[in-house]
Image 1: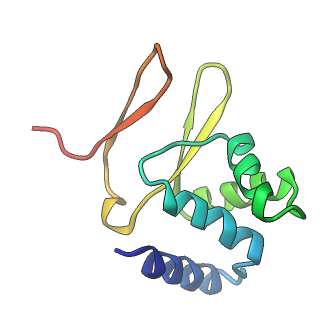
Image 2 (image 1 turned 180 degrees about the vertical axis):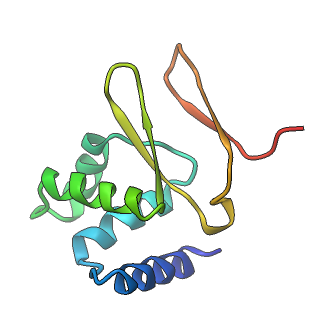
Length: 115
């Protein structure tokens, strides 16, 4: 599904739940959509979004990614260190999949199909 269609689906879901897709929430979800299969900390998302939305606060990022997680739009990976990373889950990928974490570089690889 294209980014435009994914964004429209997010907007529709938020409206169904009685929540609006604010400019800040849209910027966050667009950032995640534009970086598929990458996992970001809230601080990394904040750094990228702040460049184009200087009025955004880090608390808005935290609240938004948790909202998206609750709605099953993003996946949340929590490491032993307590650090969480978030990634958008495309509509067609909202099924069981696995993540491999490289213990050396800490990059995450999504495994969609096994076997």
